[in-house]
Image (cartoon, rainbow, N blue to C red; front, side):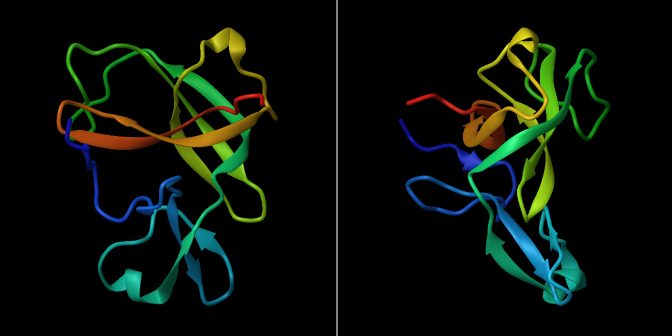
Length: 130
């Protein structure tokens, strides 16, 4: 099986345990995603932490409008904000969890997951306990 192509270039590193790529502005502020076009020259790429905490979440119960629609048929999904301490708060899909599993402040870890038959996207999931 071939690896799925990222849904957009430059979202995560190519490491065995990939990390999201953010951008550090001249004032030290980190942003995600890295800006496009001329604004990209104003940031230095930085690999972000794989681990964070759940800041907020909700269920996406209706299909987003174009151009944001995804795999068909539409299935509701979890979406939230994960704080990468000292870095940035990332808007993300949440996978491998049910709403009853989620608690604000819980440990989360980065994951690359299928988006459709040919592309992958990023998500976070509850951190696995050793």
